[in-house]
Amino acid sequence: MYLGLDLGTSGVKALLIDAGQSVIGSGHGSLDVSRPHPGWSEQDPSHWIRACEEAIAELKASHPRQFAAVKGIGLSGQMHGATLLDAADHVLRPCILWNDTRSHVEAAALDADPRFRALTGNIVFPGFTAPKLAWVKNNEPAVFAKVAKVLLPKDFLRLWLTGEHISEMSDAAGTAWLDVGKRRWSADLLAATSLGETQMPSLVEGTAKAGGLRAELASKWGVEAGIPIAGGAGDNAASACGMGTVGAGHAFVSLGTSGVLFAANASYLPNPASAVHTFCHALPNTWHQMGVILSATDSLNWLSEITGKGAGELTTELGDALKAPSGVSFLPYLSGERTPHNDSAIRGSFTGLAHESSRAVLTQAVLEGVAFAFRDSLEALKTAGTTLTRVTAIGGGSRSRYWMKAIATALQVPVDIPADGDFGAAFGAARLGLIAATGADPLAVCTAPKTDATIEPDAALGGAYADGYQRYRALYPAIRAVTA
Image 1: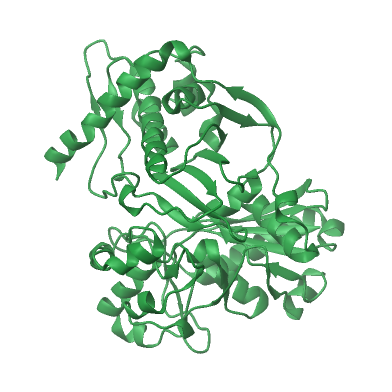
Image 2: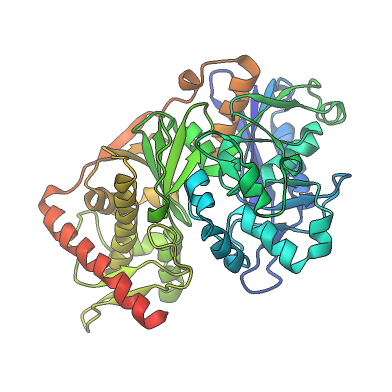
């Protein structure tokens, strides 16, 4: 058996698979987010351990015999979080999370240093780890003076599991301290934030062994001591391992709270100007690119709250047949936008409203607006040298066939719907645990799920969707001009 642990923002998931990669069972532990000031988002790292223990206890209680046969563990987790430890590995302050924007001034200052984009292949976003440390230095100098180690969230769990300070390439790529092309820490970028390599964890590939399970925990859980813990992956790279999105040209579209268009690459293809993320993948000698939109199903959920109708009710009103854009356009910038604008100030809008604009018309516009936001990410990936011929859809929004038809037609590529199963980050982490424990070929393990259905672009509506996308593209500068 192999265990995947995924540390998310709202909880920890523990997933158990067997040697044939069949899912045996799962457990969950809940987490809350603290927001003491506007723009702040924090968690107490001790809560991660508590949630992990809860998830494991639930899994072990439901499958005691199988859990006792665990031979490898993989980790995945929310990226970018700044977990600060002193020389005795005591936590110095709550972890500053990925969606915390307090360091926007420090991020802009680091991004103005050309070395950051040149070495990391990315814009320095406020959510990344490096500007958070710059903020701590500027605002909490007594804390900064005690920082002996900076760990990403999942790697704090690894410290608890193994007693070692280790990270891996995919998560480290989101710190703005990694030379992403060379897959190693950059002394120059660390020095720019008054830090050194001794304050960083050591680095391994996601498929490699990164410590063994401590005897104390092994005894408590009833498993062997020293079980290999895989390097693991950041959450999106782990999901890609779960989806089999590991070879050049493979891609998925994730329609969750936020939206991700993820493409695997066999080489390093940075294009920071487009606000595309270019990170190391969890597999050796592999990279990936991501276009990120901040409000995907969140946009539909927002409309659901406004109208008092469930998201499923809203999409059901549209029927099954895809419709041409009505002329009502929606910008899904409810909390700003990442790709391609890197604009935290922009906000969403409806335009083209008329007396006849019914609730169904607004729903249709929301689904189209998110589809066009994914088209923006597709175009950004093209400028970075990545051309996609098909994508696989995951996430809660993929249950709406109307939305899938809209995305396929907006992107002009087929969208594959996988057969039922759990292919998320915890499953990808379990796969990495299997690889680290057995030495199996990563490409033989990280295979794609069977396809249940393929949604082709609607050829008859291709022109209407192209026109709708051009209207959508023209709206950003117009709305930006009156919201700046």
